[in-house]
Structures are given as C-alpha cells and as structure tokens.
Image (cartoon, rainbow over all chains, first blue to last red; front, top):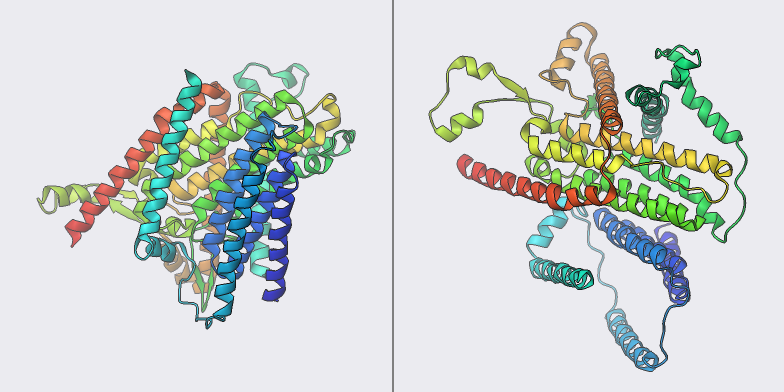
Length: 165
Length: 379
C-alpha cells in the first residue's frame, strides 16, 4: 500500500514539475503545477512519518510561493514571458551539467545498496524532535539559512527603496 | 473513526446551526441599528430579535441556491467553480485543529480528546488555514478576470496574511509560556489558577506576603499571562476579518453570481469564527471554567453519579463553555467591525508593519527573558 502511494505521489511530483516547465507562457497554470508538485512531495514526507516536515513543505512551498505567484500572475499577467534566445544555450548547457551531476550522485547512492531500515524512534517527526535536531546536529545549516534569510530581507529593502526613489 | 466522525459532526452542527447564523444575524440586525437603517421596522416587521430570526440566514441560503446559475464565460471555469469550496474547506480545516473542550478525558482505559485533529503544531496549522482561505478569493477573482475584484481580493489576501503572521508572532510569548505549539496542550495548561502576588514574592525575596493577598487568584489564562499579546491578537483579528466594503467577485452580471458571492461571504463569516475560536483556545482558556478545573468538576459530580457520568458531564460543560466564549467573541468582533470604521488598506498594513509586529516581537523577547530568568531562579 505504502509503495503504491509512493509511486502515485512520485508520479504527481513529476507531472507537476513537467507541467510547470511546459507552461512558461501561462504563469497561473505553471504556478498551480508547481504547487501540486510541492504538495505531492509533502505527501511523500507523510509516508516517511515526518508529518511536521510535510506540513512545513506545504506551508512554505505550496502556501507562501503560491501567494507570490498569485501576486505576480494577477498583477503582471505576462501574456508572453520575455525569453531571449541569447541566453538559451548557456542555460541549457548549465542545466544539463547540473542534471548529470545529480544523476551521478544518485547512481553512486544506488550502487552502494540500500541501507538497513532503522526502527523509528519515539516522537519521530514531531515539532520537539525537529527543533532539537535543528539546534544540535544541524545547527550550522540552520545558521546558514538564517543568514540567507537575512540577506534576502536586506535585498528586498534595497529593491523596494530603489523603486520608491 | 466513529469518534472522529462524531467530533466533526458536533463542530459542524454547532458552527452551522448556531455560530454562523449568530454572526449573520448580528451583522444584519445590529449593524442596521448602529447605522440607523432600520428597514424592517418601517416595513412593519417586529424589529425585536426573535427565534425565527435565526431562520433568516437559512432563507437567504435557499434563495442563493435557487438563484440563476452563473454563466459559463471565461477559460478558467473550473477554478471559478472550485474557489468557494476551497475557501470553505480551508476555514473548516482551521476549525478542525482547535480543541473545543479541555481534555484529555479518561473513560477507564480510553482517552478521549475534544479536538478533531490533535496536531502538535496546531497554532501553525490554524494560521495557515486562515491564509489559504483568503487565497481562494484571489483564485476566484483571477479566474473571473475583473480587475477591481482582483485588486480587492489581493488586498484582502495580504491583509489576511499580515493578520496570520501577526497572530503567530503575538502568540509567540504564549507559546513560550506553554512550551508547545499544540493547541490542546496550550488549552489544558490554562485549566488552573495562580496567585497574583506569587511572582512579586519571589522577586522581592520577602517570603510570603500577608495571607489575605494569597486569596487573590486569577485563572491561568493566556489573557492574564500575556495581556499585551492578547490585545495584539485581538487587533489582528479585527484588522484581518473586517473588510472595508463588499468584495466584488462578480463580473458583468452580479445577480448570476449570487451563489458564489454568497458562499464567499459565508466563508468570510466562517473565518471570523475560526479567529474567535483560535483566540479563545489561546487566550481565554478554551472550554475551561475559571477557578474550577477539570479534576474538581469530575470529582464533585462523581460523588453522586459515578466516574463515567461525571466525565461525560464535564465534557458537555466544557464544550458549552467553549462555544459560548466563541459566540461572545464573534459578537465583539462583529460589533467592532460595525461600530468603528475599518482602516483602509494602506493604513491597516502600516499599522501591522510599524506597530503590531514590533510590539509582538518585543513581547516575545521580554517573555523569553523572563522565562530564562525564572528558570535560573528555580535552579
């Protein structure tokens, strides 16, 4: 049952991602495909017993980005996205390299064989355990994310001020 | 499964048969009185509120159902048809995460809780549900393709988002006090009372003050532990749920869109009920009775009628208290909406950004400092 659900949601993830790629002219449809993809990833997290991570996934990616897309899509409504032909080749090469690297990493992981499935500890996936993990083992990543968000907010202020002047 | 279905039934029954008609009734009747547009009295209809008045929203709903069906214009018909359900479903999701009693209640071996979905990140879920339900407005107006509606919906969604963020930040102090994001834990933590001068005794180090001061006790509700947070959240709720005017979802033919507009307005009232329930659960002790905690009621009733009956009775009392508090708060929010003019969009957002958010951050910072200091004192 879990496997069937996993393959179903994985297919949804792919469908959403492809739908986003092939609807670059229509921002709204692309946005909703993206949201669908993210919700499906959240469902896979639920299958992995990480309920809180799933909730965060849906909240931040599906919810917050949906708001951004709604704003951009409804206010700007780009009938035709300005895609120049000049940057096209470089982008494609870059995307191809990144995809190859991803596949190489995946192949290496798979060739090492699946690890043993560990027993799920008590309180796994709860807010408390996630918080403890963030502030103990993963504190470096946590601080980097904080720095990233700080720089983002500074950038937003700079951009907004430029527009006001 | 049966228990969850029953809980859903109870919540839906109370919300749709009491709270929603109440909100609509208050809006219609008392706003009319406040704004001196007492139409029905001049028509010769008895202006006093009667029981039959509760049937009026039902009549409106029936009228909306039989009103002309909407036309099939526009390429995004499916989104337009789906949007009202999205608004409804998200608001109802928010309700599902709010406990409507105190709990947990023990019947022998089995534990019963008065909450549909007991999540340990409940407060987060409620604010997300509130945000999502506004997103449905954006969806509908975008699918409709009318610019004024689109602008109104966008402003409304930003208003609601600001409100939801402010709700989270203002209740951060309370979350720190309770040590949990789960609403059922927050509520059951409030089912006790504390001595008003207890903190003062510890701070001054003077030992126990005169004994009659020890009689001064307050319920351990969020409103007494976090008064500033309560005021901020109340203001957020008011800003988020009061709209400056009718939000237009219709295109060229307003009457053809009756059902959809009605559904959106009803969803807006539902949002007000969700806000009120969240505030009651966070700051007003949920279903708790002040000064009489759950164990006391059960012990008292159990003397005469036995343990099982006493627990069931307590559940009823707590549920009644919760919905009564929610109804009172809905009335307060509705009156505030009717009596005072809602600030225009820019002013409202300015107030959130320059006033509510900094105060909320300050409140949580102070709370954290006091808690750390208190832990140091205890150690």
